[in-house]
Length: 294
Image 1 (cartoon, rainbow, N blue to C red):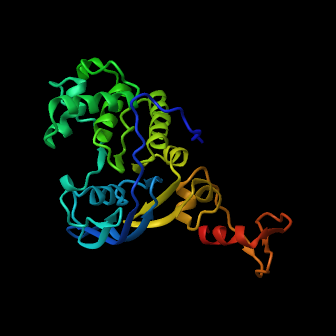
Image 2 (cartoon, rainbow, N blue to C red; image 1 turned 90 degrees about the horizontal axis):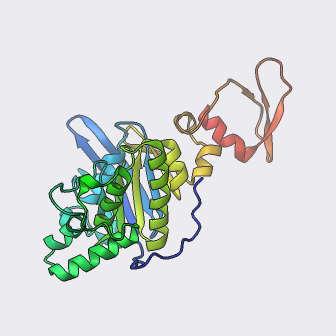
């Protein structure tokens, strides 16, 4: 897994801190399809939570509901203790990074980063100062006068990050932001995002379909399927103690085989594998996940 050791602060950076998120009974339908089906979860302030699952599992619908771009059919969403369930997206003060960087090609890097501040009525000199500060935070000092077309894919992603954090949100939402990058750039940006999150103390909710990406970056991972959370746990627990067959098959390389399990005892039970192998004793706490997975 990528190192999450504390990095030295970057010039111009400022620790923002994160906000907690509480989701209760969230439901979202598109016609007859239940994209999100009674989802409840808590995200701690400053936590990095990944929403992981196959296409159509509901992860992006949950993220868009948090952002305010989708209104739920049922349930509630609170951020930093404030009910935002039906609050317009423009009033939630959240940072958002999309799969496509959506930079304005006709604006300089500095003006791209400062655009959100301009829409908020911040004076030119102040918004440029804050934009320069945000560029320094993502290690793009001196790039303000360049145009987006003059940047690499990784640099454009950093500009998108700078634009998302320039007004110091306490929550950063990311919708598969690395899928357009090649392998080396993707791994570099994984480390960069973790460095930024650790430095600012911001809460991150990160949507991905890449298991390795989620297990490497997140403090906890919510595995989704058919609109429901199958398991919400730390990466190591998901890998070593899957609670359902779906999670066991979705995370990592897994082999399934039939087995006969003897009576459960306090410490464990005897498990008989096929082929005449000798029974082996498995601890009860390890066995529970494997029984569910089977």
